[in-house]
Length: 147
Image (cartoon, rainbow, N blue to C red; front, side, top):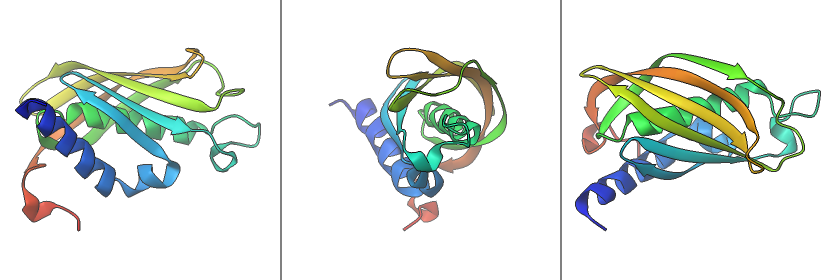
């Protein structure tokens, strides 16, 4: 594993440890490369709405989480500025949701990401665009790390 991939793995480890809300929902980030990220969410009854499909808030959280992950690939922590997500079909009759994010533009301060949420059958559930702001803090700055 080269140094760059080691950095990606470190970011994934720190985000996995510190992102308690995503952890509570069961979101697992499975890959981070330059410009792309992938996360998965196993579907359980606790994240379904009254109609039996995955709650839109969980889908939005998966999208925001995977978008934030790819936005962090250069080592800087980010915060979400805005996100627009179009829900295309209900997440029903599936066991897992897969979020993929692709970097559209990374500027000095603002990052734009395209996100797609699909199920394990490759049915597109939602897609959108999220904007993030780079913070001055880096992931390798241990002074700000949660213990």
